[in-house]
Length: 231
Ligand code: DX5
Ligand code: ZN
Image 1 (cartoon, rainbow, N blue to C red):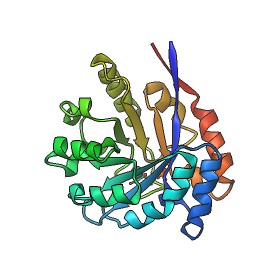
Image 2 (cartoon, protein in one colour):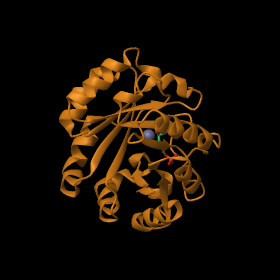
Image 3 (cartoon, rainbow, N blue to C red):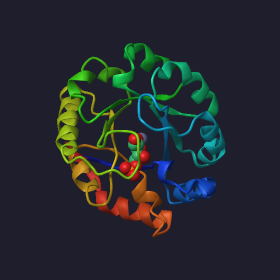
Image 4 (cartoon, rainbow, N blue to C red):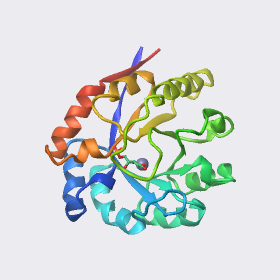
């Protein structure tokens, strides 16, 4: 038996933007090693958020801590922006299966930029859409809400979807691929997700909930999810 601890990846979408640097520093001091930046274009999703300028601003903090700076590209035609995000300091880039007609080309473009390639699925997109691309990616991001906004309610069927994906990865000798779950993740569901095979939990509202310090919120999530055991 081996165990992989679940990594907490705070989504800064829910941070206090007036104090963004301090909030991210708090998360890094709490031991976080992956910062999740949600990029929205008002086309692929019905909202606008942030771009390479924010990534560039966070870069020194992430580099000092040795943390991954991950962009979740909820945008049409992500290929047009990969260079810009790479130059800004993104070290992991996740694109949407639904937005990429040439997904293989896009994933390999990300790898050539020396970033971890990830692919993301909407709740209604079946796992079958990943069949050909799985051997080429480092991360599969399973959306547990329809993308576009923080603070939405977790879709319970995600747990079974994660379990089916982990089983498929094991069956194909690809168990090293990370499964990241994004949307409505909190202390009440991380354990079930971890048991199903999630290895990265994206958490916005539950990490930046202003009722407690960021470090305390991270500790609560860590304690709630425990570790994933694999054969
Ligand atoms: C939603 C984003 C998520 C979101 C998570 O489109 O991809 O990363 O900000 O936020 P919570 O944890 O609040 O659902
Ligand atoms: Zn996200």
